Figure 1 (cartoon, rainbow, N blue to C red):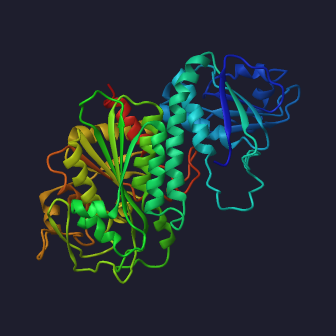
Figure 2 (figure 1 turned 90 degrees about the vertical axis):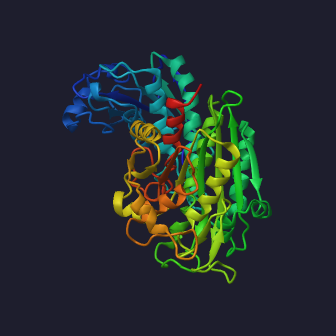
Figure 3 (figure 1 turned 120 degrees about the horizontal axis):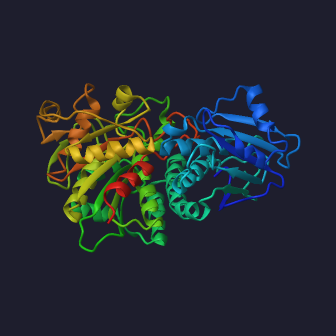
Amino acid sequence: MSAKFDISFEKSAEIAGGYAILLQAKGQDLAAGASVADPSDVVAKAAKIAGFSAKLAGALDIVAPEGSKAERIFVIGLGKADALVSFDWLKAGGAAASKIKNTTDVTIFVDAPGVDVTATQAADFALGMMLRAYGFDTYKTKKSDDENSAKDGSASVKVRIVTAKASEAAKAFEVSQAVANGVNLARDLVNEPANVLGPVEFAAKARELEKLGVEVEILTEKEMGKLGMGALLGVAQGSVRPPRLAVMQWKGGKSGDAPLAFIGKGVVFDTGGISIKPAGGMEDMKGDMGGAAAVTGLMHVLAARKAKANVVGIIGLVENMPDGNAQRPGDIVTSMSGQTIEVINTDAEGRLVLCDAVWYCNDRFKPKFMIDLATLTGAILVALGNIQAGLFSNDDKLSEQLIAAGTETHERLWRMPLGKEYDKMIDSKFADMKNTGGRHAGSITAAHFIGRFVGDTPWAHLDIAGTAMGSPLDEINQSWGSGYGVRLLDQLVRANYES
């Protein structure tokens, strides 16, 4: 974290220095200005001079306003009061957090005139602040001068959020804190360099969730070999770093209820193997475990907020290297399912990891549904850029629930097609299938490959190659590793599957 916010909720507060932040919707008078400025029209005059229109996440900055005890006043726009949605409050909170520098005391008045602010919205505003505050500077020996005064971790910024629904907002904020911590855990994992975070180290991070009540098992190379996970182990055999499969269980639902299952691709670094990638941009392949990071972050959220659901998270952790022992194009491996795979391209490795993890999950847990997440194909970037993730599914109901959750959280999904004609493209002359169908429809054939290991279980595959890392920076994310998928899947569980 690049700033620490000590957030509390209060019904009223007196300004005795520091920053004051007010919220304003379009077309509304800023009556709350009287509480921080005397004369009370200081803010109104400043807004008129600056042409402040209160557009969503817009900001008006008044330095050392005359007659006010506040050192600085900010007004954050909310846009139209009758058009506000949940994500708008996160954006407004992020915009407010971006203005907090060189101070340790902030008072925020969220009860904007003309807006009936709920406790959940106040908590969402605080969540936006926490997500915006994240920064990954672990390996910087010199800190930037333009960052918050809490940058070095020696102090925190006291933030008082003033609202008539203070007690209810404080309760709702307990959930917001769990979400923020889960997202930021996923961001940390994606941002860590691969020389620090290998398969064993990643598995140890998953093991830390035991502190929250998650049951964690770590399968070793030997144990996976006994299970017949030849596809996953084939990817790992070129690396001196041994693979791991982490199995995380949260048992918050009714005993005996089938769990919800989330499976993540965890390639901690991907050179492409023998089918080696070009040098340019290869450093980004430390983030090829974004799916596993999202599943780990999600399990943190569910356990921290005591979700009333049974959930299993499984992550396959490997490193793909071009060692003398690495698998070759043309090799044939046998998956845990017994199906054989011709490895056409060793850089199509994520699906090999997932196919064994998905089969293992389905065979052992008999889940209600399975959702896998993977930074799987460059082709999805060609199709959707880094604005939306690709959704592939054999189940319309699950797809509709995921799309609705994506709309609510702004972690958006676009459903892509599946079909027999695409599935035939991965048939092999020498084995049951090959691991790539070629350049055309690359994301679709990759999804079909995973789909051959799903059976009749409702399933969705999320290709997050464009959204988990290097996605556009916005009001709530200034990090290369975005933590995409954590809020999306938490919302899916919360809205549809908690008892």
